[in-house]
Length: 558
Image 1 (cartoon, rainbow, N blue to C red):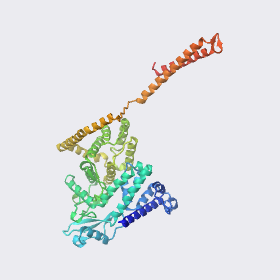
Image 2 (cartoon, one colour):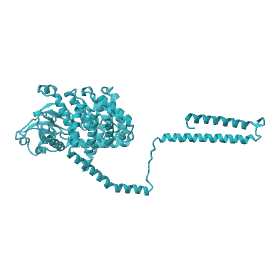
Image 3 (tube, one colour):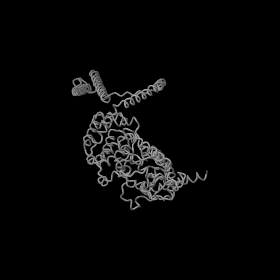
Image 4 (cartoon, rainbow, N blue to C red):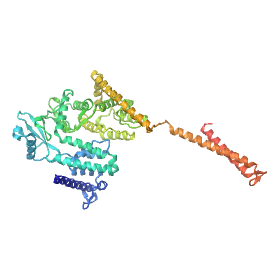
């Protein structure tokens, strides 16, 4: 027990040293200093000493550094590439280039994993099994096989040791994230500890193939409700945490334009069907394929659109889904007031804002993109404008929407290839009309009434506790009341002006009285038996009084 703990501690120390060395190598030595990772005898070479890194931008160096740090950090970079609300576009572009392809591991290792997980020899489990994988990634690789009953399947096998390595890296990432939040401003601003926690959940789900299998089953149940969508069957008797066996479905990938044309496929109709399926998944079912790139989507038998690899799945809860539907309907109808209302309802505007200005900005974006073909719209430019608009009005996008934005951009890219003339209206209008019809259905109305009744019950049930807390604060003298008066600054300036004029008038009156008293005194030199100081006092009073009268007349407040 002691030696095992000592070994793990030593491994974490060595890995920390390795990470620090790579950070220094790519010119991020300031991060090493801020996190306190440097140690005696550690190398101090930096970007200036490595010729191949000179001249590279900080974003390119960051991407190459993640690749050198290994599979766990590559996965982290891929997750961060979805955070369009946090990171600059230049960095997002580099993170999207992160390669998850690594050399496959040997067939003997794959055999040992399968036999250990399924509890029998490979020859008894499968009638045929291809020793050469047709796809390999950092977490696992995929082989074609045939079950004893003749069913063609694909078998995903987890890379030996990857789970142990990922867990060690995740623990180290959590330590580094804690240091970043405690010691640096950027760690606090970006809430690095929360990002690592979110990433840990995602990666652990991807390392457990039973999670992907359950996702696959969930989407397979949707097939009867979503026309043309097809999801392969999971064979659970041949699946575990480290092995996943699913039905083999052959097809043409959606980016293989030449093959689609040779097969006589109407690519415009295919683009519309693909977009509608993805919209239905997200906005109707509340769960969607979060990585719908062409490698995971194909045109299969019977003109079906086949989805594979459900390792990344996004969710929209009922409340957020309803808010997104309202927003989509408002955009389709071009109703600026409804768009602004939807933003308020979705809860991403946290302060008072200038409604006329945000309405003007939304109108501008609608005019720019509403009827424009997707081929003429730059997704990067559109996202940048959206985020600039959000920043301008201090609007924060909910974290649940960042993955949806990323998936939407992928869908947009695929749709553009299939039908360059498709516009945003072409995509959204038919779907929005169907959603409107569904909202008039009795089932939907009953569901909404039930949901509102639950919210009302929750509100009423919580009132006694809230009132008790309010009364306790009042009794203890801890109740703070904040009153905000419209145009308060204007009224403060008016009161200040009145006070200044009153003070000025008092000074003038005091000068007059003093001059009158001095008039009968014999103080100082005199002219015609009148003291000079009294004459000067009267003159000053007249001048100041005339000045005050002119100021009052100019203000129009006589």
